[in-house]
Image 1 (tube, rainbow, N blue to C red):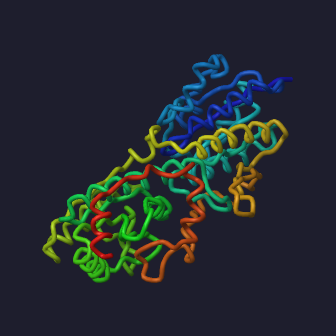
Image 2: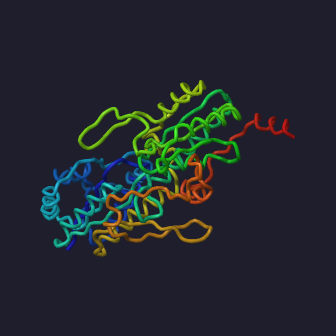
Image 3: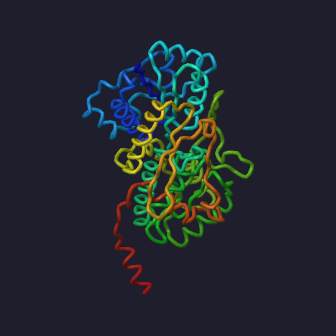
Length: 394
């Protein structure tokens, strides 16, 4: 007997979450064990409201638009679920003949996926997770779909800002990247460099306590040398006591909201060093940009969507599709299934060997690891100013 499939999106979107959705729908359409392919319209809350749409009726030409659509085409949420909600889902799934449930998301969504799989385990309902996060903080796997595009975005923005600052080297520019507890996106700004002296000149990650005195010392030294300095920082920088370097501006029962780290540091440079400084915060632009979507990221996002369908239909449950990197110099990946308990609410931070000793940059090992994920070289720029400076040195 055929069963229906339900796909649910959770948390913040990425530039390729809809590519995973494309993979799910196209793969499910080919499977004779699947009847309707439902999308939960509005995240996990939509399950409780039974707000389902049959995505299988969408023709191929329209489906292809998913590959170039930002946000999430079926909507997402950060809806808080309780045990009664999970228990209720079993009856909802049965009522709608849903035998296969796919959750596409990050740490929080995998937690939900795990809890749903537990209540469904004795009811012939199979629950599988699809990885998604720009923060790249899911445990066990090499990297998560969504990260490659976010990495390409921050690297491109940093390279372009760097060219601007080099043209008029009169100030310090502080760029703030997303990633409160893990600095993977911030670190990817290093891919902007083509040669020594290129931006970013300094990189600060949340994995290392932020030292204000060392920061000012580093900035002053580089400013005296270059005139213009580009610094990339994580939104989650903390001091040696583990506290945010900026005070909270608003608190709720579930979250604390802080001011902009980049603005705080730019103001610090102005006050303490008397140097002109400005801040830039791309924010959600970095997860919404289709113009800077990584082809590698998109292809892998499609793949994990397809693999999730295959796993669920094969009777796998309580697992997430993972990505591992093949050994060797040539980049390639394989997928595997991870027990959901190993990724539920576990955050993966940047390892120490990817951060330099001073804590103001990343290492060559990180650059080597990250570079294949952005899908090719960034645009190359020309600087006649560099040429005349090189002639002068000669």
